[in-house]
Length: 166
Image (cartoon, rainbow, N blue to C red; front, top):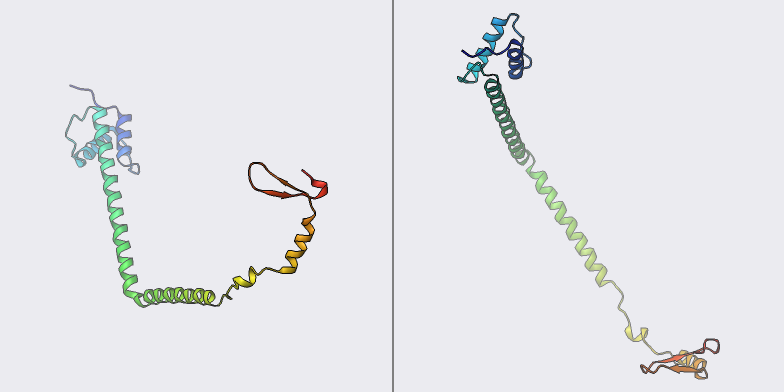
């Protein structure tokens, strides 16, 4: 016959299952409490094997936590769906009004951009590139008597001031 689980381990296993449990006073009641827990979690294996009993309790707790987490997740999704439905039901005009306002704002911006484009003064390219004869004469006179240097690699002519002769 296998040895019984030690009383300290019995107490540890009871607390593992339910940390808030009120621990029975005597050893017999503690062992009875552990037996109730094992029956509750449908463990019918070797009740004198500490490791198997502990693993069974841990597996049960993990399963319970996973199920609780799944329930909470489903409740959150249901609440989100209810809130969406409520918002659509209670505030459809506001949602439509908001969409209409956004469309109106976009329309105004587009109209302003088009207006700005049409109100841009025409560029008088002829005026911008009109040759000013006097200005050309001044430039011509200024550089006519200047020495120049022509590079051998290309047909570029470089005008030089007397101080900058190349």
